[in-house]
Amino acid sequence: MASPYELSRIMRPDDANIVGNVHGGTILKMIEEAGCIIGTRHCNSQTGDRCVAALARVERTDFLYPMFIGEVAHVSAEITYTSKNSVEVQVNVLSENIVTGTKKLTNKATLWYVPLSLQNVDKIIEVPPIEYSSPEQEEAGKKRYEAQKLERTETKERNGEIIMSVSLPEPYTVAFSQSSLIHLVGPSDCTLHGFVHGELHSSQSMSGVTMKLMDEVAGIVAARHCKTNIVTASVDAINFHRKIKKGCVITVSGRMTFTSNKSMEIEVFVDADPLVEAEKGKYRAVTAFFTYISLDKENKPLPVPPLKLEGEEEQKRFEEGKARYLQNKAKRLTDKERQQ
Image 1: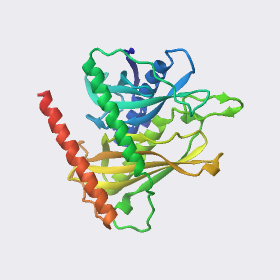
Image 2: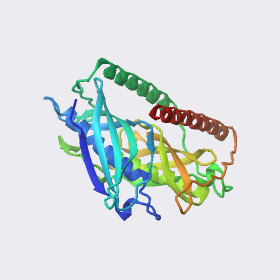
Image 3: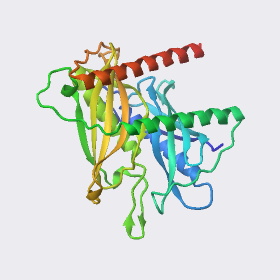
């Protein structure tokens, strides 16, 4: 099995919100950086085409504890399964208070990468296999692979929706809090790029930047809805459906889909619009669900205002969000019982 990869850095004021909580998007960006590095290293451990590990999916990510300015984030990544054309990376994040020495596990994430040739980014490279400690470990990894493959297919089929803006909406409605950000993808957003046969090929490792922007939009939606300090509680699977190229203008849009007594679910879309290859048209690149909670000045959970629904579509999305909420709640209870 490939050696784990670790990175650490101290959290600065520009990593956090106005009350000192580190943005969930900052953590997601570091998680993706660690995953990309270990995935790319592993996929280039064999002879043949040089490649870069491109993020295809992030499984549900729970934010177990908040991280604060001045703490050190320790991110460790390990490859746990490989298929013919994909790599599963497990990532753990610890926060360290360097004054007291206290460490806490803040995040556990699973990411899936596909290796793309640096000579031809449309070509997927075969992944070198890893050695498993037991047949059971390999079988469990195969089940995870098949499950995420099925869910990705189902998600892609419902990708046609576009968020429409509404003027002067009523407070606590979906339209009142929905938000969008527009961002031009530049060289500083991409960690790997190059020139091939006189043409600039697409840069593959801006996934962390994308997730950070998605978290920012989801945070704006949550803050508009409840008008309090908000923090990321969890992120359901993040699906990367199509590559985002340097030079694209991306529109990151978010809308409230469900509220419980103490949490908010926000659906986030990323649409990419190529400036150079405009004839290819705008396309849906990434989708995900973010869950936020509202906090008081002592960082204790506050009740969330109920979402006012308008129309059958919003009611349908609310019921789907409720089902995800109950499913995740049951899973957390099961995991807690296993740990006791």
